[in-house]
Image (cartoon, rainbow, N blue to C red; front, side):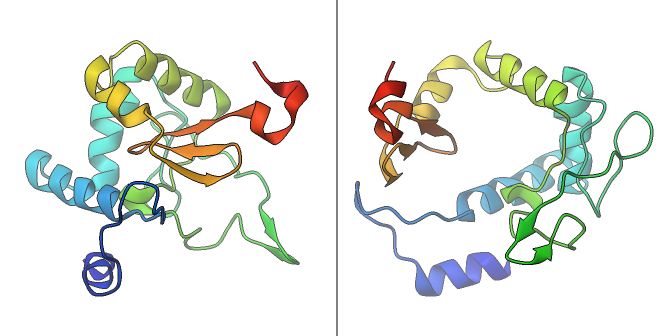
Length: 158
C-alpha cells in the first residue's frame, strides 16, 4: 500500500514511448489476488501456480519454503563490494518479483506460459507486445520483456 501511495503522489501515467519502469501494476494484481483467492500472495502462488506446474523447488525467500525439500541456496549476487543474496529484500519483492526457482522450474513456467496454460493466448500476446524501449535491445510490454539481440550486436541478429 505504501508503493501505491508513492505512485499516486509521484508517478503520473506516461504516454506511449515515455517509459518509466514501476512494479505498481504487479502490486495491484497482488492485492487483487489476495482479495479474490484469500490468503497471502506467496501462498496463493504456491497453490495456484507452483504446485499445478510441478515447480517444486520454487519459493519466496524470507516468506515461504519450496514444496519439496529444503530451500537451495541462492546464487551469489554482488553489487559493488556487497554480497546481497541473503538480503531481506532484493527490491523486487512480493507481487513485483522476488521468487526463487531452479532453471528447471523456470523452464516449466516458460513452457506453460507459451502453451497458454498460465495466461490465455490473446492476453499473452498483449502482454508480450513491446510498447516501450528501456534501452537498446531491451523492450517492455505489459509485464513481459523482449530482448532483441541484434540491437546489442549486429552479428546476433536473427
